[in-house]
Structures are given as C-alpha cells and as structure tokens.
Amino acid sequence: MTNNLNIIILAAGKGTRMKSEKLKVLHPLAGKAIIDHVLDTAKLLNPNKIIMVYGHQGEQLKKYLEHENVVWVEQNNPQGTGHAVQLAAPFVDKNSSVLILVGDAPLIEFDDLQKLTQYKQAVLTAEMQNPFGYGRIIKNSENQIEAIVEEKDASQQQKQISEINSGIILAESENLQSWIQQIDNNNAQGEYYLTDVIGLGFKNNQPFSAVTVRDNRSIKGINDRVQLSECETILQTKYRKHLMLSGVSMPHPKTVEIRGQLTCGQDIEIDTGVILEGNNEIADNVSIGAYSIIKNCKLGKNTRIAPHSMLENVITKGDCDIGPFARLRPGTVIGEKAKVGNFVETKKTTIGYNSKASHLTYLGDSEIGDNVNIGAGTITCNYDGVNKFKTIIEDDVFIGSDTQLVAPVTVGKGATIGAGTTLTKNAESGKLTLSRARQKTIDGWQKPKKQ
Ligand code: UD1
Ligand code: CA
Image (cartoon, rainbow, N blue to C red; front, side, top):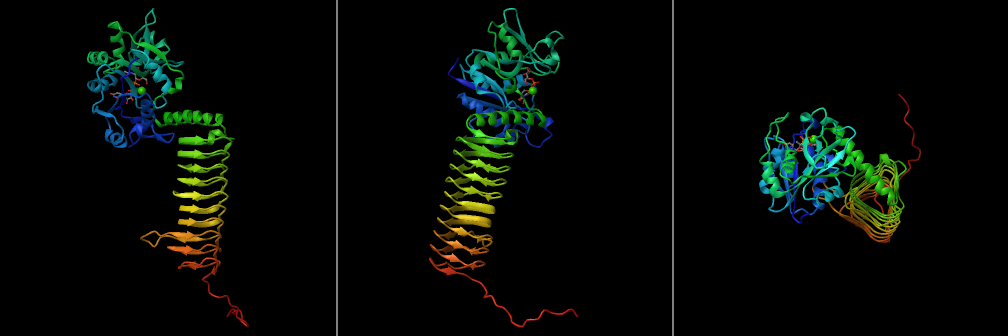
C-alpha cells in the first residue's frame, strides 16, 4: 500500500471496429464519454498523477479533456500495451504505486480498484466461463502467478484455464520502470505485451497477486457499437435499480434512461420512456409522465409533469402542473400552484404563484407575477430580429386569448387585456386595455349570387 498513487490510462487504440470518425473513447455512454467513466473512477482513488497514453486521432481526446489535470503521452505508432507503458514509464513518480487502466473498459468499479491498490503488486483477474480472447493467468503449485499468456500464444492446455487478465494491473514504480524495458515482441502478435511484466515479477521473486473482480461485467471492454450498447444496458440497469431502491417507482424501468447525475427524494413516479439527462434534482412526490425528457432541472416537491413534456434548465418551486406537451426551455422558473399546459413554450421566464398558461402560448424573456391568467394563443413578441426584449406581467393580470405582447412592454397589476389585442404600449394597472377593430354588422347585406 502506498500514499503515492500514479495511474496510467491506455487509450491509444485505433477503435477501427466502431466505424466512426469519432475517437472510440469519446462515444457517449450513459450521458458522458466512455473515457469520462474511466477518468471519474480513477479520480475517486485520489491519485497524485494521471498519465494518459493517446495515439490515433488523439487531438480529439486532448481537446475533449483539456480541462483535466493529466499528463499526456503520445504513442503514435502503437506496438502493444507494453510499448504504451514503456512510453509512459518515464513520467511515473519515484516510489509510487502505478495502476494501469484501459480507456475502453468504462464499467470498472471503484471498489475493485481500491482493493487492488491495497497490494504491493497485483493483477485484477476474473473467472470466465468462456475465457476465449483473454490473457490466461498461469499459476504455480503455490498459487503464485508465474506468467500471463495471451490467447494467441497459449498452448491447448493453457487455453483451458478460466482465470483471465482483466488488463488492469498494479506495480511498484521502480520495478515497472525496470521490467518494462526488458520485455520483447517475440510473440504471436509481434507486440510488446505489458503482461510480460508479470512474468518478470515472478522471476525476480516479486510475484504479482491475483485479485478477483467482484462482478465480471465491470471489466467489459468496448470494441464496437454492439458492446457499447451492452455497456449502456448494464449501466442503466444499475442506475435504475439504485433509484428504485431509494424510493422511485418505475412501472417500466427498462424504458427509462438515466444520462447523468440524479439526486432524488422519495415517492417519485417516473413513467414509461422518460429520459433524464445531465444533472437533475428531483424532490419528493414528483411525477414525470410518459415520454418526457428532463435535462438539468430542479423539480420541487409535488411537481407533476404530464406526458410528452420537455424541460431543460428549469426550476419548479413545488406543487405545480406541467404539460402534457409542454416545452420549457432554459431559464424557466415555475412557481407553486402554477400551471403550464399543452403546447406552451417558455424561455427565460418566471411564472409566479398560482399563475396559469394553459394552452398554446409562447412566453419568452418574461416575468409573470402571481395569480395571472394567460389566455390561449398568447405570444410574447420578444425579438425584433436583432435584439431581445422583456415582457413584464404584474400580479392579478388577465390576458385574453390571442394576445401579442410586443416587448419591451409591461402589463400593470390587475389589468385585463382584451382578447385579440396587439399590445405595443404598457397597459395600465386595474384597467381594461384592448386593441381591436370594432365589430359591426351590415344590415340588408345580400349574399352574392352565382353568375
Ligand atoms: C489485453 C491484455 C490481455 C487481457 C485483455 C483484457 C496485453 C498484452 N493483453 O489484451 O491479457 O486479457 O487486455 O481486455 O496487455 N493500447 C494502447 N496502445 C497499444 C495497444 C493497446 O494504448 O499499443 C490500449 C488500447 O487502446 C486498449 C488497451 O490498451 O484500451 C488494451 O489493448 P488491447 O489491444 O485491446 O489488448 P488485448 O489484446 O485485448
Ligand atoms: Ca481488448
């Protein structure tokens, strides 16, 4: 055990089987890139240093992770995992413990890695029913690891071994630096194998221990989009289970997708087909209707969202009704007892206590007070084609249907706006304002006759 942990992440693989312009480890998985999963788990171990080995299309990776504190090592001509570590080894701290992870195995669990780091030198292994393709763990009669043999180099007898190398190993820095220079590429693949270091450990009387992974699924690697979707399923199943056990009901959990962080209270109901993206905070007794998408929202206690609603960067203060078919865009704040109904779109808009916009409305850049009623078809004309302007609607206002509020404009407290008004000047409080051609009836008018 050491208090100076260094982590090397191998991410120079080509990822050819993804059939993509995008670097393999940048493909999204449960709301973040594959590499983020590895990096986030690595950071939980509090390493002194993270060294990232990058190669093919590596500029994409550097750009994506530019805010991360990692040491970049380029491997532009990948010749195997051993070659990658040869390049990284000079950057490793003296007297450190070096944990080597792979960038394309994103399900790796903190608990397993933490257990591994309790050892001086160890390999994370797994018992596989079908070990085909993996490096096999060769042990002597005293149960010490003598070597790891790759599938392509293994004898028929060695291929029978079901204990395999996860690809993740821990070594002492000085040993690693010395042994990694001693490996060669005289093997079936003509590659430098990192795994040969394990054999050198045994020969130098410092054998590696085998630490068995708790759940074989957590070492799953991603080479193609089928495996990517399998990893997605594994993660989603885990997230949903966690949510259900903490007080969230999901009648059809398999249809619910969690793409990011979620803080949840109790007695929450999430219906079929809901997608939760980014950072969401959901308080007690919230219900989210079928096929709604909730992104970066803070939903207060007793918020009810009816089906097919889409909310992004929205705050609800509690006990309110949204949807069905509501689209609440960033900067929307919904007060208590408020209602935003079907085909209502909001953006940078605050809706006060007990205020309602029940149907077919656009409210942008607006501040709406308490007890306001907004009629169907109301539109804030917030944009003149160049600049955006604000609409202020004070408390107790009644806006008749089919009203256009040409911003900047203010409707004073208690005002009523007649249906069909195009409001271009402020409306005085307590009064009825309307702009409408007077209705007339033409007496004696005759329907034209067909000629
Ligand atoms: C490796 C192990 C094998 C283990 C398996 C687990 C070796 C020699 N073999 O085999 O024992 O059972 O993982 O999945 O280590 N990489 C580089 N540079 C390179 C080559 C690879 O950065 O030159 C990276 C890849 O991007 C990948 C990781 O290292 O993330 C593993 O490489 P890969 O070629 O998939 O190794 P395997 O042959 O699967
Ligand atoms: Ca692999």
